Amino acid sequence: MYVASFKNGKFNNQEGDITNTKEVKRTAINTMCTLEQRGNLFFLTLTGDDEHRFGPTLMESIRSALAQVKSQATPGSALITTAHGKFFSNGLDLAWAQAAGAPSFRDRLSHLVDCLKAIVADLLSLPVPTIAAVSGHAAAAGFLLAISHDYVLMKKERCVLYMSELDIGLTFPDYMTAMLKSKISDPAARRDVMLGAKKVKADEAVRMGIVESAHDSAESTVEAARRLAEQLTGRKWHGEVYAEIRKAIHSEVCGLLGLTHRAVVAPRL
Image (cartoon, rainbow, N blue to C red):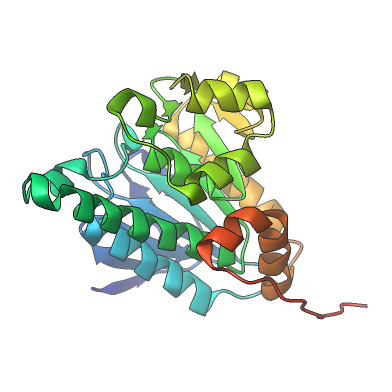
């Protein structure tokens, strides 16, 4: 792990240059993801050109990054999650689950499902607004990761949301079903996603109410996420209040995740 700081410089990522006059702090969690802080904004990036399959190492790295955000967040912070390459994430690392042979497959798959559950719980508990900038395909667990954020922005071309469980012969974990019910309010849209295994492009995802907005490129998707984050951070909401309201909104999901809701009084009068 390392931390490097640059002031008044230019940050170069895989999708394009983003100029930022604020201090940039970059933490390489490992070769699979990085966490950067630019002013009040945290950028969690899944790095590399692979499918960003969720195996134990990547999911542990994501949890480590989210823990850093939680510990370092202040009123006016926000998180943007994005990924390099053609995939936001292609789901759980089923090859890892199968690698130990048939007798161990179910146990390994269950372990992956539990690790993903912990990430969803971390996101719903995070005391900052969260935005997923989806610039590549998001399938199964990748789809779930995206909608576990408060806002989803999506690239228009060569980018779909896809719940592949029906096609590959797996049922949904209870917390995943609850999250899909919570985030996709239209019954017909939810049917198409879960019982139709539909590959949903950005414009249709906006119509379904899954995605906030659709954008022409990966760079413009991340830039739109940054602008939205700046609007949200300008309100300087109290982090614990924000997190508890989020948990109350998604009460069924939180119950399955083992998260409790409590009242927080932090008046700003």
